[in-house]
Image (cartoon, rainbow, N blue to C red; front, side, top):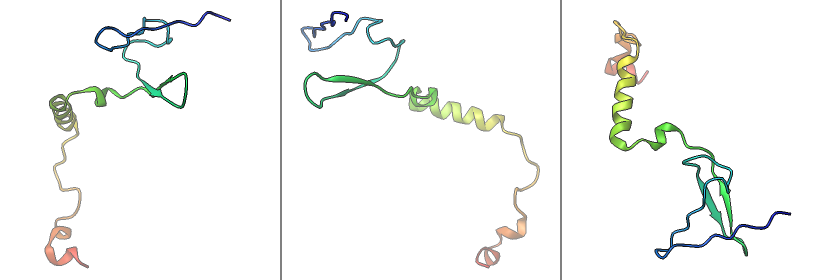
Length: 89
């Protein structure tokens, strides 16, 4: 059995884990699980690119997507269906 790796926090309290120890690429996400000794790191499912974008870029991305949608010349529902008296039938 391989000798366990020992990790140490920095003076500021941060724990830096060298690449390759966890077997994950860049930006992999883990959550700590504290159900006793020792603590464990559980890998989280990868997040979508959409979740990683800042809010202003999400808006820009959504607006770009809407702009690429096919343009309709007519309403998607008949005009008479929009009359107030027909909405409640």
